[in-house]
Length: 205
Image 1 (tube, rainbow, N blue to C red):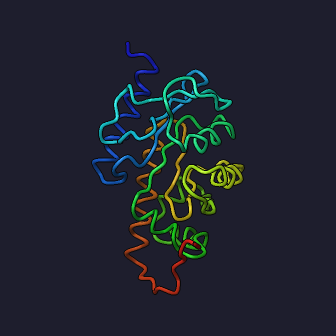
Image 2: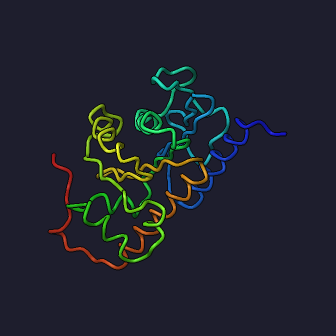
Image 3: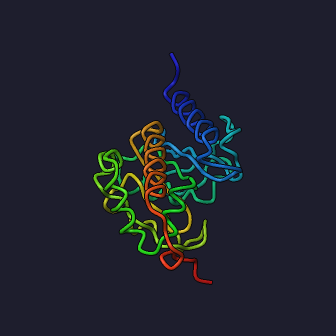
């Protein structure tokens, strides 16, 4: 009988490898976590989804204290969802290509609503609740504050402006499905919409 922890580790490793093989994450981008016995297990800083192994998980308690290893610097985003609701048991963050393109449009919120106009599946999974999180540098306290402000509606997917997406669900496989559905919906949208330059929002420097 495989332990519950082993099953969760196997699911996270399978999901990470599959996302990498499908090109939904590259290099050492992306992070994945799950809860087990009131601890967050999260891929460690600098780990690559394509090579992720069991020993590549750090552990953090529900107050944010690092218990073991060096977690991804984005761990506060994962923690924010777990602290928001017990409905979240797993979280995946990626910079998947078409979702990231979507995150660079001016008025990303209206583009997110337009995603739902073409295929029904993303709306079925999210009930149309995909908040957009304002840009701040990756890993920064400002980003975590922006992110936490948007978790109150208990969304399954959040779009991070100029960055990527975060999906939270009842287990790793459901979070994986959300990442895939968001990416395919954004891909369909990109193919159906050609965008002139003046409609594109650039990061202010």
